[in-house]
Structure formats: structure tokens, C-alpha cells
Amino acid sequence: MAFIPRWRGTGVFLGTELRMVLHDPLAIASSALVEGILLVFVWVLARDLLPFALLGSLVYSLFLIGQFILSEAAYIRIDHRLNEMYHASPLSPEAYFLGMASGLAVGFLPTTLVLFALTLVLVPTSLAGLGAVLLVLLAVWTISASMAYTISTLFKDMKAIWPWASLIANVLGVVPPVFYPLALWPAEWRALALVLPTSAGAALAGAAVGLQPLAAGELLLAGAALGLQAAGSFAFATWWARRSAREA
Amino acid sequence: MAAVDAVPRTGRVLPAWGLIGWRWISRNPAAAIVPVLLPFLFLYFLRIISPPEYFPLAVAGAMLYTAQNVGSWCLMDAAVNRIELHLQDMFAASPLGKVRYLVGVAISNLIPAAPAILVQAILLASLRPVTAMAWAVLAGSILVIWLLFSAIGIALSTRIQSQREVWPIGNLVFSVLGILAPLYYPLSILPPAWQAVARLLPSTYAAELVQGSLGLVPLSGEAMALDAILLVAFAGAGIAMALRLYRWREP
Image (tube, rainbow over all chains, first blue to last red; front, side, top):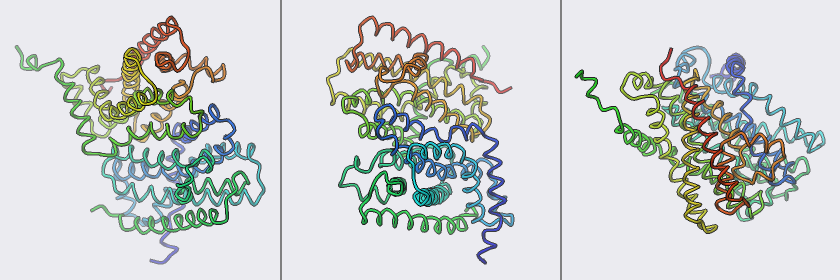
């Protein structure tokens, strides 16, 4: 299949998904709740870590927006069996995946923009730093959405998804150094933190705004890990979207 | 006597709900692992960012939070039963009453959470000596919080229209209630306005009671008795409100 037709319909499905999200203002309002809670913990218990936590909350917010596709894709497929209809239509599986992911991203952006504004107030940065942070956020979202879409196709039951969604979001968001500096994470596990998408993103964003300097090797490791994971997971998810388009 | 009158109406259904809880975790390992793991992930985070002297308090708070979180699992479970499986209609048509359904779902969701509470209790005992009285206070507080939040979860589940609403509503209600109450830190370190809001939540009295009985915050006997009375009173009012919201038969 030619490259361009393969993505035709992405914009239309983005609009469809966006309308679904906008019909659910409660979901938009509550989408940044976990970040908000962790920020409250930091504000109450370790106020000096707030700049790190705010920058981390931005990274985590994009990660969670990517993760929303896990339940959304499963909801469309399991609860409504709509994906069969979509896949029987001229909409390609790749456009279905990317349209859904980007529709969710646009729909849930308002709360992230609030975090973004707060971060800019507390962590002033140069234009180049801002550009680097945006690039990191895009990579984190791409990894998360690709991973979430792939995983969602493996479930046959909505109820079984929630524990997994919760596990992925918390293991990758709460444990590694996303809301706190890399220096507080055990030194022997530092390399692991620099390859996990959330903490690598937070470390790179911290370095970009001058909040958390990284050694050249660490910068290279985190950058390469994030870049390769973003490209690899997106390529896999688009391939998998086509492969799993029709249910067995 | 009509055949329907011969159907047993008391007691026996609760072990069946326990079995449902067990079957759910035995078939879905993640469902068993997640409730155990989640409070520890938060504890790890708190251990890193907060002063070390707050850690035993955070462990006791995690036990209460785990009990409180059963409510969100009840919301999900009861919503799936009603919306996806249409099982609630079948239960409503059976001799099972709405309160026994509520307690049944609460029991079946307490089973996956029980290992977490047990491990947290072991961790707490390893951190500091816990008297028999403190264990009793902790167990009583967990029981009240579990019942209250399960009732809230199931009541909410009968009002939502689609499974898509389960996650945001559960997240909003249980996370906000969880964060407002001082489960993981002493009430005294919070700003006055926050303290005033927290005083409206039953979990605050459960937390104070537990923290006082463990000797983690200085609290007189009278203050603890008052906390116990307020906990029961607020929880009773909360359960009454949840039962009022709870819709057993669909219109």
C-alpha cells in the first residue's frame, strides 16, 4: 500500500475522537488528577522539589494522555464493536490508530496546558530549551500511545484492562525519577531511569531547561533511548494495527 | 407455601461473593497484583521525597488508603455487572436485596486488597511496636472506611450511563477524597483552609485516630474518643447518602 493512502482518514478520525472526548468534560477535568495528587504530595512534603515535580508532571501528563488509548481502543472494540465497522470501511488501520491517538491528545490537552503554563512560571527557560522540552514531550506521547494501542488489542474484557492500565501508569510514573530529581534515585539504577520513557523524558527535559545537568554519556543514553523507543514503538504499533485489524 | 418463599433469603450469599472475588483474582493475576502493588509504589515515592520520620505514618495511611480504594474497584465491578453483563437486573429480580448485593460486591473486592493490607501491617509492625489496642483501632477504622467507600462506589455505579465514565468518575471521587484526607501526613502540617475541608471527611478522623493510637501524633484520650465518634457519625451519614443515591431497579 502506498504511503500517503495508508494514512488517509487520520484527520477525520481525529475529529471523531475529539468529539467523543469533548462530550465528556468530566474526563477532561479529571485527566490530570494523578499528576495533581503527586504535585500536592511534593508541595506538602518537599516544597523545594516543586520545579522538578512540575516539569515531571508535564512529561507524565503526556505519557498518561498516550495511555488513554488503552481503554479507549478497547472500549470501541469490546463494548461497541465499532472497530469492525471502521476496519470494513475505507479507513486504514494505521489511520484508525493515529487518528484515535491524536484525537485523544488534542482533547485532553487543556489540563496539560495548565501544567505547561505553571511550569513556565516556575521554571523559566530559553526558546531552545522550550523546543527541546516539546520534542521530549512528543517522543514520550508517541511511545505511550503506541504501547497502549498495541496492548489494548490483546484484551477481550474491559474489566481486565483497568488493573493493567493502572499498573503501567504507576510503575512508569510514580516510581522512577519523574516527579523528583535523578539524584534521589539509587545510583546503581541510574541507567535504568535513563532508558525508561517517563524518567528519560523528565531527565532530558530537566537538562534542557538547566534544572538538572546530565553528563554527556547520560544525555546520549537518555536521548537515544527515547528516540529509538519512539521510532520503534510507533513503527511496531502501525504494523500491529494492520495485523490485528480483523479479529480472529 | 409458594416455591419462592422457600428460597433462602439470609446469609448464604456472602460466601458466594467471596468466591467471586477469589475467582476474579485467580483468573486475572494483574487484578491481584495491582491492589497489592499500588500502595507500595506510593510509599516508595513518599519515602524518597518526605522526611523519614513520616514513613510509619505513611504506611498506616497506606492501609487506610487501600481500604478506601476498594470503593473504586467496587464502582468498576458494579458498573461492569450492570452495564456490560446486565447482571444487576438478574440480581434485582432474585431474592437478593440491594444491601446484601452491596456488601457482597464490597467483600468480593476486599479479597484482592486483603494481601496488601496484610503486607502493610507486617511492614508497620517491623517499623515500630504496635499495641493490641492500636491494632484494634486500625482494624476498626479500616472496616468503617471499607464499608463507606464501597457504598459510595456502588451507589455511583448505579448512576453512570457508560463504562467510559467509570474511570474519570472513580478517579475524580476516590483520588480527591484520598488526597484531601491526611492519610500520608499529619493534619497539622496542612494549611488551615485545607485542614477545615479535611475535617468534613470521615477518612480524616480515621487517619487521626490511627496516627494517635500508634503514637505517631500526640493525641489525648478524649480527642481520640471524639475522633472515633466523628468517624462513625460521618461514615453513617455518608453511607445513608450513598444508599439514597443507590438505584437498585432501573427505571
